[in-house]
Every structure is written in structure tokens, then in C-alpha cells.
Image (tube, rainbow, N blue to C red; front, side, top):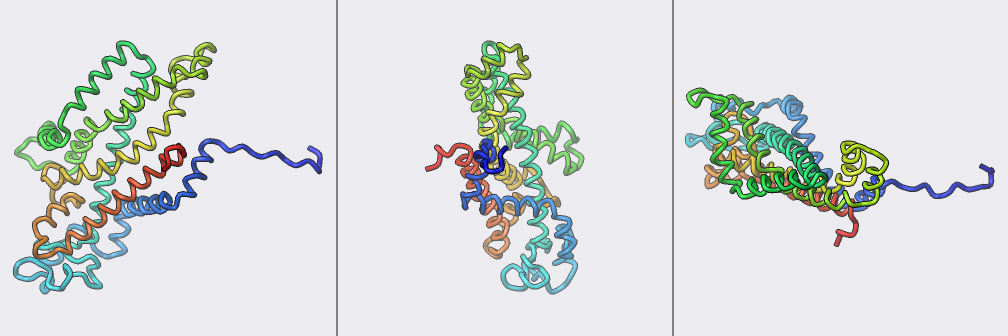
Length: 320
């Protein structure tokens, strides 16, 4: 290239354009920071507990006099908040609220992420296969999806959690925490993938008639190569957008099951179990409910706003 010749403009990939649009969305950036903060708290829960000098299992209020009154409520105002217990003490049991919340976030996010990954993978496999192959396969997958979507989700979750747990553990024995977590993931996954599968089926039906797919067929590309190289890259937008909506829904559903007593139970820290305790003591200690409730609202709102921003970044025409 001659020294006086200027280079032409460098083209940007769709990913770079999406990232550029997302960075300009202040709401999306702030929401992403909030979501990352919650994930960091969950991942670093043991480190936070070590630095803070407390754990979520020790019953400080019962072991030390002067922390709880004769009715089991914190003696100090505002739920026992002070320089030692930053978020106060749990009524009756006297455990530290901050570490309970930090480990509860860890538990809830682990379950929600696992369910989201399983649901997305299932939806991608069934939705893309049904849309690309069509015919009898599409009909069978479609009717199976319709059947599962007819189930009342909340009733199914409440009714089948004990049944799934009983498949692994004798009802007379105490159920290990990992069994409850596995059963919760299994039940939430079973009815959590259908909406995304329908979206991906419709998108695949439209894409398989496009010229680049026909060109790949004419060139002799296998079905697996066409799906992997031509279809999946064009389906990542709905996958990512829907995943940002699915994860907070799974967080609230898992918390609801724990609240109802069929999810995570004592002594494992959990967001939903903290709500159950807060509902019992709110008349005498409203402060306890403030921290898990405020954290849940902040996380759900931030994740939903992040989902909107991701959608607008991928498709600016959808922005209002």
C-alpha cells in the first residue's frame, strides 16, 4: 500500500455492533453490573463469610446471652443491626442474616443457572430438530410440547417435588441437601423449556427456506453441518434474549417452592426459606424481611431490564 494511501473503513461484525449498541444503553449497563454483583456475591460467599467472621449456621443469638429477648427476637432495635451483625439476627434461631442472605443467593442462583442451561439445551435440540426436519418429527415434538404446556406449572411443582424426592430417598430417612437440589432442578427443567422450543421451531422453519441454507444443501453439506454452521448462529439472538427472561423466573419459582416447604429446607440457606421465616415474624421484626425481599426485587428488576437491553441490542428495531 502506498504511503499516502489511506486505509478504508473497517467493517464491524454483528457481535461488535451489538456490543456497541449495548454499551450505549445506560440502563442495560447498570443492570448488567447489578446482575454481575449478585453472581459475584454467590460465587464468593465462602470468602465473604470468612472476611466477615460469621457463618450462616451458627446460632449466635442462642449461644450468647443478651442478643435475643425472652420471645426470641433481637434485643437491639432494627432486628439487631449493629457493628457486629451488619444485617441483624434471625429471630428465634439467632443466626446471622448477612451470611444467610449471601449463601441463600448462592443456592438460588446455582439452581436457577442449572435449570436455565438444561432448559435452553433441551429447547435448542427439540426446537431446531422439529423445525428443520418437519413432517412426523415436527408433529410429534409439537404435540408433546402442547401436552406439557397444558400442565398447571405451580400445582405440578408443588405436587411432584415430594414424589421426585421419594424416588431417591426413603420417606423415613432424612433427605440430603444435594438430593433436594437435584430434584428441584429436575422438576423445574421438566416444564421449563417448552416456550423457547416453540420460538426456536418457528425461527428454524423460516431459516430453512433461506438461500444460504439451500446453497449449503446444494453444496452437499450434511444436515448436522447445516444446523451447526448455518442455523444455530442465526438462532443465538432468541436464545440469549429468552435465557435472560427464564433465569429470574426460575429464581422466583425455586424461592416459591422453598417458601411452601417443598424446596430447600433447613438448615440450608435459601432465599425462599428466608421469605418463609420473614412471613412468620414480620409483625414483630419487619427488618428481617427487608433484606431478602429487597435483594430479590433488585435482582429480578435488574435481570428483566438486562433482558430488554439485550433484546434491543440484538434488534434495534425492537427498541421503542
